[in-house]
Image 1 (cartoon, rainbow, N blue to C red):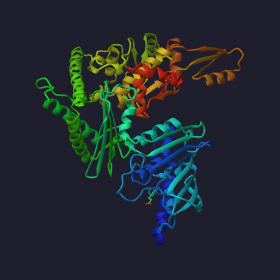
Image 2: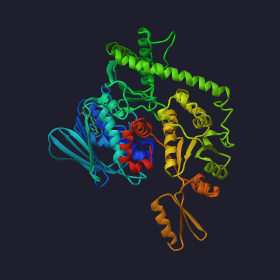
Image 3: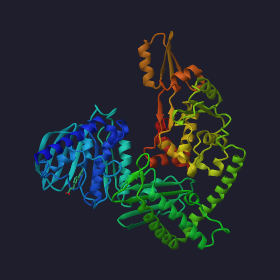
Image 4: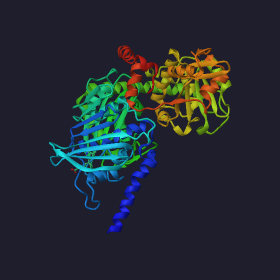
Length: 630
Ligand code: 0RA
């Protein structure tokens, strides 16, 4: 008995030590992303209380000292002493690795999913953490440092209601940065509020005074209206339905717009399944069948015509939210649902409910199918255009674009493609590069705005075609990351308005047609210096205004000359290599899609049809737009 106890105890101790030794294994990374993971983890636990029906309010505060407080009105973490471990439940939950779970599978859990590492991981990676619990008409308190208990569980006094408050300060010994971003946290909380109709989530930033309350009684229906608020919807009300089979709950909202892109967001237990999976497959299958069956039944098609899945999804915005008891997450980023039973369940619920909706709303059904028919014609034209280009050999990998200066290396994981604007910069880059692993693709003509064009037009644009063939993956449904010819694709544009514009056009293209490439972390933005600072033979480069001032000071003000680079063309190849292309010395920004809803909004507004929201957006974000970072 006592032996068994000590063995368990050793395991317990090893548990949190291993989190501090290898934080990346638990939270992915120790950069800003990993840091924010801590907040999500605590919030996810509160959301679980909401999913179980016990919690209606969550408050998140970024405190003036940079710590985070998350308060919920759930049941409160249990405080009674565990028979075997002789410790209060809350202490076990916070100081042992696998005791975070609520040990039943009667409820759906967020925290068991993607982030499912438990609040003890947050505790392990915090310089200090305090928990306050209201339960049994009392308020309890306990404090920990770097995962270790520093005060025994205390009773602070009498209390009404129930709930948990966790306050933590991330450990600067672990994290590269401990600076929390209001925007990052707020975006995630807003998404959570949309996915949990009626749940009130509040965020306060004591550092800046910012404050927002998210509460959407309309749930994912309101989510759709929010996503589409800068687009032109084809029908005023989203289509909404829900159903449940074999313990799997399915909730869907759909609204078509006049855009050409497809925007389907999928969630399982409130976790964004970026990589899709069986629920998405089931939804797509049913959608295609419903549109084809309705169109055929109502004689909307020319003889023998049928709509492809892509035709049926042109201009769609949809949110699919499923609740699955024991979700299996697969894929590169563990955001692909693997449960095979879910496919059929989502498919049958969608088929049944959407057919019913179409029967009851024939005008909406016709509008949607008409759009798909037009898309089908455009796709046919695109196929012909592609065939033509194929016959000319343009899309074949054996016929790489003429202006591509390829590298000699054939190992994609070591190869880089620089996409450079204009001939003069292209020329410099070709001279500057290391031919072995760096390829250069200069873009000459205008890059097409894909936000305003259909596939047929996109495939006729020479710059885009060159891009697609050079990269090798194909686009849209045919996209295959395995065929990528480079694992680093680097946008290198001038730091002026034109350069920004081209960069945004390219980012739009990658986001809409090669999103998995971004998700794989293959897309980068080069960071050429803004200033050259020299004194005598000493030359330094500065990448920001602050750096310029610092370097000038370092060189001693007198006799220092400063050159501001307006374009890449102003640098000679040697300088371009030293400052921007040499892997040993360059810095690059990796493009990530932290929040697909926000990125969608950004591109819709910046590149879409409607002028008014664009003007407003640019006025509101005049500074950020210049430094676009999706
Ligand atoms: C373990 C068991 C129960 C709830 C919780 C943990 C819990 C954890 C967190 C973290 C933040 N807020 C939380 N709220 C609850 C179940 C409690 C019961 O059965 O009464």
